[in-house]
Image (cartoon, rainbow, N blue to C red):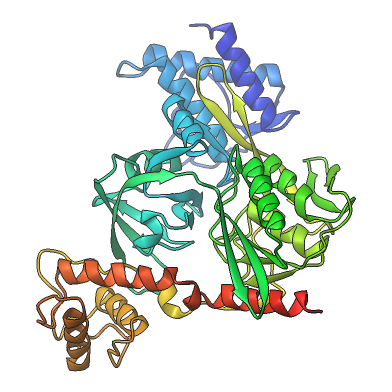
Length: 489
């Protein structure tokens, strides 16, 4: 059976994307399998055969027609082609390149729109495991305690080994109000963590504004949660309003920002980076570089400080690096995620897309941050309870003399709420019982000293409230302090 010319064209284009030139394969080709005589395994030197592009495509066509015509069961040509494309992308070994069928491509576009339903986290395939790059700020994923670099092992009790990242995402997403149970592998944890997350509508409100009055100074805050279609426009509008209100300094917060559109961060850079200074450089496979410089007229007449953390990825790292290297502005927080590549989406003509890494991005000074991240000028760590995981309770409550990660989670939260458990090693001793009782009394729950679902939910609600209080945000408070100091200079 001959390969349809349009389908052949698609495959040729995809092969070209993987690299021009000849390919080398080993082995002899014949229409029938040739058994090896006993005792002769490995006794012959197999010649290396060089194939031209045309010969390689004929090989592909022959494999396809053989499978279609002779495989023991009926096969679907469309699924074979889809599998071949997926296989080519997987062969790249790039966690950020992906083939998206029609359904997944629609989900991807939706995630960059105004809202979607799910848990609110960016995931990627890293070292063969579906890994959380960053939970969105204020999302169900963040409230449940999911963290950057958490590796998802199971979804609703089903092992996901072998699934693509897109297949995993489709299982995680779902209707608002439903719950998905994720089994998580986390560095530093001796056990797998069971994390239930209630799905919700995730609004893509990408720019938030707040002001702080301190020591007679007005400090403006612009928080960017992701770089979507309208982010740059909203940023410009809200920055103009802050400037009209007479701010003395500006904070740019990209903590927990998983990235997004490159052009959005370039446009935002035009509002902040001094005139003519580089915002970002891109480098193609040949090593050729293209730079984008700020179009801002002049320089801002107030200090600017960036806020970053280990969940800041991709486009947020571009902005952070530009603030640091071209703006000479301080960055407060922790070293960022370290995603230094740029993906572009290619429409394959039937509603499916190829998301492919086509460039590396470099900082204004020409530095690559891939797997390294952008380092802050001022390292500042959040309190430990900021990274607590929601306590997961099965049918039976967690009681005295229990041992494990769920007890450890509860102890960390109790300590963050100033109910001292006495220890944080995961053993449910008498002092932990007393701390649980004290907490239960504070929220009008029967003081049993045991952690049932009601108590676990209350613990998580209270710790999220504490995390959301700006006074408890050590990084933010440091940035405000620095902004006041610099605005007075």
